[in-house]
Structure formats: structure tokens, C-alpha cells
Amino acid sequence: MMLVFAVVLYVARQAARAEVAAEREFERSESLLRNILPTSIAEQLKDGPGDVIARRHDEVSVLFADMAGFTARAGSMSPDRLVRLLNGIFSEFDRLAEIHGVEKIKTSGDAYMAVSGAPVARPDHAEALAALALDMLETAPRLQDGVPIRIGLACGPVVAGVVGSKKFFYDVWGDAVNVAARMESTGVAGRIQVSPAFRERISGDFLFEPRGKIEVKGKGPMETWFLLGRKDAAAAQPVAE
Image (cartoon, rainbow, N blue to C red; front, side, top):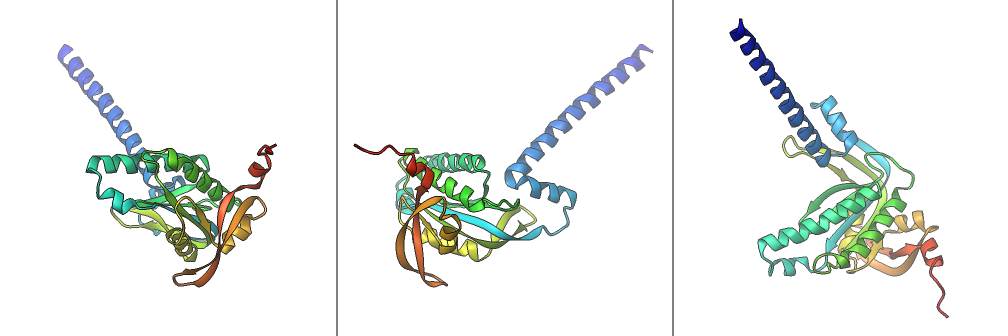
């Protein structure tokens, strides 16, 4: 009888340990999934893993940022220093994106991409992304090695969805994405260049400096502006005597 009791107790303990381990592994998997995908998209993927997740968003803003002169600098860095530099910068950008409720899409090399208004629509998508861009520009000089960055902003319709069956990721496509990438690549280090549509959308609340016409691949000559800051912030500055 005692032997049977001991066996039952042992089995019960092992089952309890297995249940705790399974719960821990489940939480770890959930955390990884939330880090890879937006929360709403992760829930869709769990509900129907065989379904194609794709949606058109009519009002979205897109941000591209990269580090000026990064390729030349990377060639003179040790691998561990290079990875620490990128990790420190992108981790800070992730923190800022979360503060502003903006969705990071991906990093590629030294480039950082984010969107506002997808996968969850918001009426202030352009304002939120402009605020993020200004914070990124202000923060970058304080990061390791005083990183100079270029930022490009554009807005418009996009298609968004999950691609891949292994190492899948959430991505966006459309003219707004292409224009934002061009705003960054033709931009100036330490400045935020925006498209005409983006500037028109938030001109009531933000200050801009006209750059003039530039040649944009696939678009031809385009009038662009540099985003300077918020109008209310400028009005709050003390007047010099």
C-alpha cells in the first residue's frame, strides 16, 4: 500500500512539474510571437495559421531612417563593437516607437522602418510619426559615437500582411513606402525630409522649411520640405532680450 501511494505521489509531482514547464514554454512562445509581430496580427495568426493575412490601409504614414556614412564606419569597427552599436541605437528607436504607439516594421543593415496607422488605424498617424521622427533626431547625437541619421516620411495607402512560412514577418508595400524610402535616401544627415502629401497633412501643427525640387526616382521632380518641429513648441520658446 505504501509503495502504491509513493508511486502515485511521484507521478502527481512529475505531472505538476511538467504542467509548470509547459506553461513556462507557452509564455515564452507567446512573448517571442509578440516581439516578432504586432499583437493583433499575432492573434490572427494563432486563430487561423493557414490563412493569408493581408489588408489594405488607406491612411498610413511610413518612416525610413538610416545612419549617414555607416558603411565607411562599419569597415573600421570590430564585429562586437558594430553589433553593440546597432543594438543600442535600434533598441532606443524601439523604445521611442513604443512610446508614440508606432509599429516598427524591420531593420535592414543600418536602416530602420516604422509605420503609423497599420495594422490598427488611427486618425493622427502622421502626427504620431512626425513626433517619433523628431525624437529620433534629437536622441541620435546622444547615442554611442554620436550617430548622424537621415529620416524620410511619406503617407498614403499601403497593403500590409505577413509573408513567409519560416522566419515570417509583417511588412507593408505601396507607393507611400517607396516615397518614404526616397525621402530618406535623398535626404540630408541630421534632417527629416517629407513628401508633399505628408507636409500638407500636418502643416497646421508642425513647422517646415522648404527644400525645393529634387529628383525622385520613379517620380521625377518633387517639391519636398524639412520637418523642423511643432508649432506649439516653437511658440513656447522664451524670446531673447
